[in-house]
Image (cartoon, rainbow, N blue to C red; front, side, top):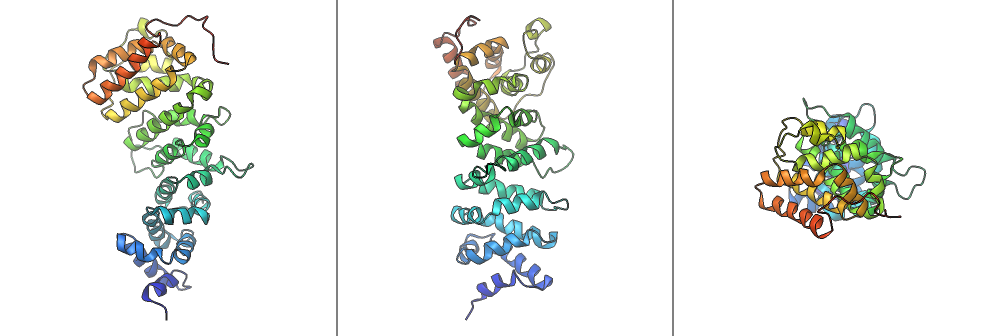
Length: 338
């Protein structure tokens, strides 16, 4: 004889809209507690496909279904099952339907699923040569086009997805691919007023800089966006003269020549300094850093810094400049990596 919970899960597939709506709302409420999620996990092979199908229905049903899946995906075992059953493709398909009304929830579900290696592989579409990178390209495009500071942006959380996928080498290589131009698009969001967006851009750039040894050229191809994103958070309060900014990329020099809002969150400043460190470890990266007057900018920023952890990050970069022969601008005749 079926238990009450089995009957409830069965009602998720009911042909009656009112019954289905009531069932999915109860399931959503159950997933809000650890005990409820644990009980439902015993019926994962039924409840997960049923909730997945409900994502395609009207908002009154798809919204609680998405909320239930977000809650259940906090369990890594259930998240792995979702990935295995193709949940990422389902979420992407529904997300880009013209009449999609649960975009924010679907993006949040993708954030949870890309905490797993298998979720990252699925989103990158690594195993499909023809479609590889399509999902990521769509998400980056939405992240960059949708910014609207006057409302709650459903694509703000894409920044967290980008951080997740850039933790893996395959994700970093995709974002750094100059033909795709994804990182260039992402970096244009670094001065957003949304802390969530800024955090996503900062974390993604830092992760991509771990590929500096092999992908430095692709990083330096987007110099006009790279250096503002890395140096403005750590430049301090100084307003630079026209002579001082003459060697800098236009975007960086223009920003440093006027009064600017401080980057209050020390995490941004630490990540920027860590990224700079990873770049200037490479000889060509060090030359590029000197070419934009980077050491001077960091020196001025350090004088204004008060946070001990950020100061430590400044000092780590400074130590590399000193002990790595970086106290003077490298000669232009230095040999470049091959």
